[in-house]
Amino acid sequence: MSTYHHITQEGLDKLLEELAQLRAQRPIITGQIAEARDKGDLSENAEYDAAKEAQGLLEMRIAKLDASITASRVIDPSTIGTKKVQILNKVTLLNHNTQKEMQYTLVSENEANVREGKISVETPIAKALLGHKKGAVVNVTIPAGELKLEILDISI
Image (cartoon, rainbow, N blue to C red; front, top):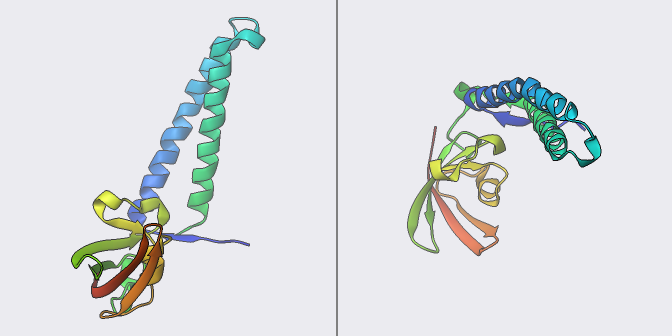
């Protein structure tokens, strides 16, 4: 089964930049392994073990990024509407439990950053909002309990 996720061009560029940085570290770690190997007995060589572990972690992260980039589909912002909540929309909500307004931009999992008000479309809140129109009241089950959210505005 081939699955993909939507991402902005900015998000894809960040992933590609991180991948390039990680690939640039390969020769450094290979050099550390060679240097540690030259020191003799590998069975009791902590430097060698640490370098091999670092190499394994690096390769695992590179493979994960490669897979994520391959599965990414860049979203054309010009195709994003505001009639119904969808990825890349900025949604203004009223939390009926607290009577407070909040605003989130729905983004891909790789681009989520709560401090910036960006939540993943994979979160319970975003999943509950997707496809709803302005004025809709949506009930969301989160680990802390039940939320009742009203969609006040949908923008780009």
